[in-house]
Length: 82
Image (cartoon, rainbow, N blue to C red):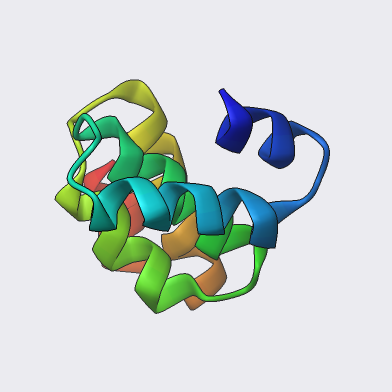
C-alpha cells in the first residue's frame, strides 16, 4: 500500500523506490511491474516504462498505460494495436 499511497500523492520517485524494492526482494505479484511502469511514465522515462509494463500481468491498466506510452513516443502502430 505504501507505493500506492506515494503514487496517489504524486510522489512518483518514492513510489518507484517502493516497487523496485519489492522487485529486488522477489516480494511481488506481476502487477508490480505495471505499477513500476506507471511511476516511470510519470517521471518521463517512457521506454523504461514500456519495458516494465510489458513484463507485468495483462490487465486493463497495462493496456491503458501502453496506449499512453505509445502516444508520448509517437508510436502509431502500437496505438492501433490497442
